[in-house]
Image (cartoon, rainbow, N blue to C red; front, side):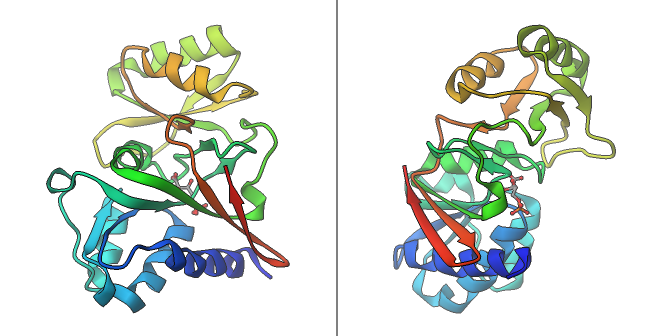
Length: 220
Ligand code: DER
């Protein structure tokens, strides 16, 4: 199976976790796009979606799925999203698609984060994928220095990228994230950091992992 076929497999498998009649939290990325396309087939059985990016909003609306303002929603059963990496506890690196801030906001509304990913995303220790960090533009250099000083990471500003919120993304290379909870909590406090692309506090409860032998359901 190709990586795209694995993404389509898990995107469809996620339908089993959609609660009928509920509002669905929808993430961002190519795997989520497969989920959105599958969700369109059952759009009459959901109340609508809360979206984590302009891109996902546009795709949902193209399918005629109502996209609700996050401020009109208090609690949703599930949030479906991809990851750049996921470890053995369901902690993730996210932000490859530069949507990490709105993703974490919508994940915060949800009772359960269901991660959908192909097997290439499964790692023992987070950090091989450069860690995305959304920063206010004026803080980019100082936050880069803090990652170097605190964790030995090498941060670069992602070229040509402005987030939906008008900020910059730093990609931090060379990290071994053995304690994702600590790094997320520490770096989130640095002035100018909007969101750290570690989802430990908002880790996944379930991961639908696309493998050559089918979909593996991991629970954390
Ligand atoms: O930006 C993100 O967090 C996306 O969810 C990303 O991590 C996964 O995108 P992909 O499904 O296109 O690999």
